[in-house]
Image (tube, rainbow, N blue to C red; front, side, top):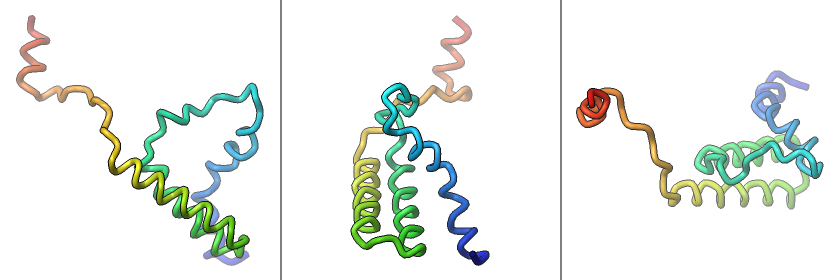
Length: 98
C-alpha cells in the first residue's frame, strides 16, 4: 500500500461502523433523514473515487457515484433548516431584554 492509497483511504474510516451495523435491526442509531445531504453527496462522490482507485467493480463505482450525484442535487434544492438567530441581531437582543 502506497502513501497515496493511505491518504485516499483515511477519509473513508467513518464509513466502517455504518457498513458493519447498518443491517442490524436493533442498530437504528443513524438518523438518515436528518443528515445533511449537501455534505453526504460529495462524501459519496469521494467514496466513488476511492472505489475506482482501489479497482472496485464498475457497477459498484457507478452505483456510489450515482448515489453521490443524487444526494448532492437533493441537498442543493432542499429547503435549508431553520437556524438559530444571531446573538448580534437587534430583534434577538431586544427580545432578550423583555
